[in-house]
Image 1 (tube, rainbow, N blue to C red):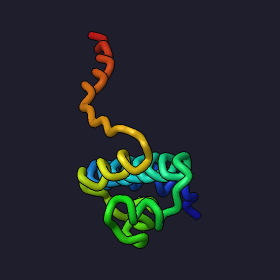
Image 2: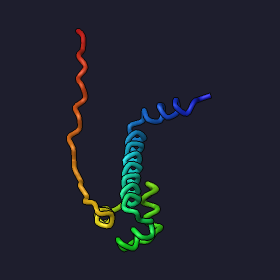
Image 3: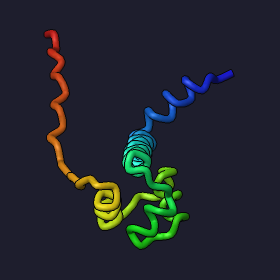
Image 4: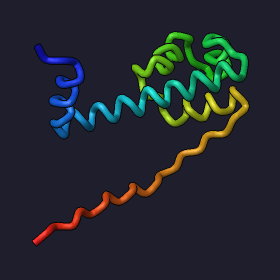
Length: 102
């Protein structure tokens, strides 16, 4: 019987599956950050939705990680929660070069 860990390792060996998996992890981290900002501001999903002109169901989808929000929505989240939005692109770390023995 294949364990879940072995199955995950096998699936992630496929570059396309690995890329999709990494993208989902990013969406989940973003969703967690948005929920954290909302709750720290003491807002319910309905209150946040009213402040940014959205429906509560849309906020729930975003915070579940099932929907990637538009930049305007992220700006609305920031303003409604008393924060500012920062978007940054950071240089990837170079992979260490393995020396080859001759």
